[in-house]
Length: 159
Image 1: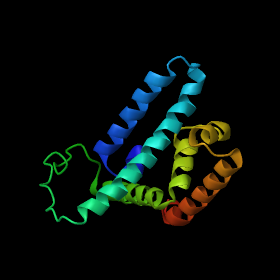
Image 2 (image 1 turned 45 degrees about the vertical axis):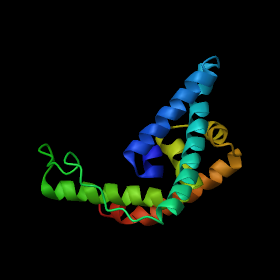
Image 3 (image 1 turned 90 degrees about the vertical axis):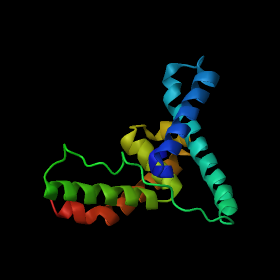
């Protein structure tokens, strides 16, 4: 979820680590059944904080012009264990389309979809984690699913 929200692995890992540390330090005495929704609530808050910091950072950085950093050789290394070229291309296209479709969703829809579909939380847990009502969870989730179906329909029809 953090990776999709930030599109930056390092920032996503920092956000998750910070959320985990906060959960462990502040809520260790709570019932373990509460930890999942609490963690996701903390994570949502950290992601929103990241967006706020990025907005400020982008305003400041717009005054400066920096050249792109050199490419990371590990990221550009050839994968020797890949599938065939056609399968790899199809999988890549579908993955890219899914990631882009998820990133294009409004933040609330994106987070609701990820909590419900990928994390497996129910409506009440998702509502608790996000600090919204169960009805809002259902609305955001329904809109997210509809938007993803419209965007990714070509991949389902091709199979």
